Amino acid sequence: MKRIIIFASGSGTNAENIIKYFYKRKTAEVTHVFSNNLRAKVLKRAHDLKVKALHFDKISFYDTNDVLNILKDAQPDLIVLAGFLWIFPKKIIDEFPNRVINIHPALLPKYGGKGMYGHHVHEAVVRNKEKESGITIHYVSEQYDEGAIIFQARTPISETDSAEDVAKAIHQLEYKHFPVVIEKVLGLRDEAPSAPKGGT
Image 1 (cartoon, helix red, strand yellow):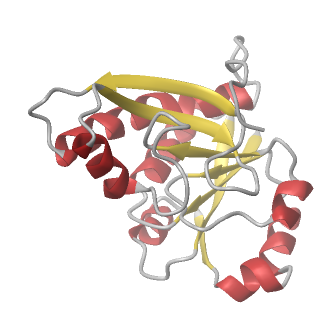
Image 2 (cartoon, rainbow, N blue to C red; image 1 turned 90 degrees about the vertical axis):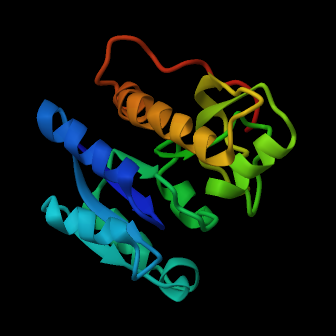
């Protein structure tokens, strides 16, 4: 059985969706959920779903090898960032090459970079009168939202849509596609992931 570790900073609805998805399929399991936010709801969601929930701080993430050593011991086949807001350390990316992926609530390269997350993205999309938005699942690099793209899905935006309307549509895309793309990256589906487009 493939092993997945999730990093999240907030509510954790994507994390819960992924945990439940693989619980039903028995082809992979989420073994740990890590959060940099002690008050993040994702920690309670993980605990309620009988998944190990761990909180860490900046020192253990960046300055020491505490988090890296836990990851090494856990031996994940894939590390999944689902609403995780800190830049990922090079030492972890190097230890798990092509095994760290992230989901972004926009069509990269648009609306990416530091500070572009959650409602900030959706508000910018509406403010700029975009006709569509979507999700991007990509490999993680040392820069925000610049790793090679694995998959994108789109949703139209009408002139009357608010940022909240866009957020709801994006969440539906995330719930539908993220677990399936994780399956593909893990080699649990016959078809291969989409070829990377742009980024490095």
